[in-house]
Image (cartoon, rainbow, N blue to C red; front, side, top):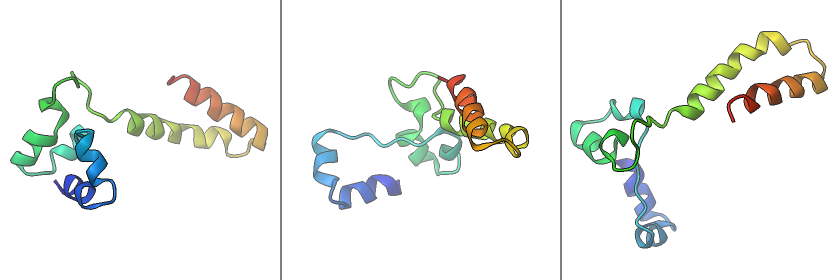
Length: 91
């Protein structure tokens, strides 16, 4: 909806059109829009997305909230080490 219009009117508009940029929204966000917008931009109705809901980053960062109580009093080194371990498990 608005993203497509914003891109088209920006300095990236010409390049986006040349490269046939396709704007999609994540599944959760898509349900907040009107039906026509969902049919055009929701990953469920796009070829090549399969069962992807585009919420992986949200899940990863949400899970990192569980590390806060564990590393709150850790040294900077151990804090970074623990976060590195946490995020490497998502790789």
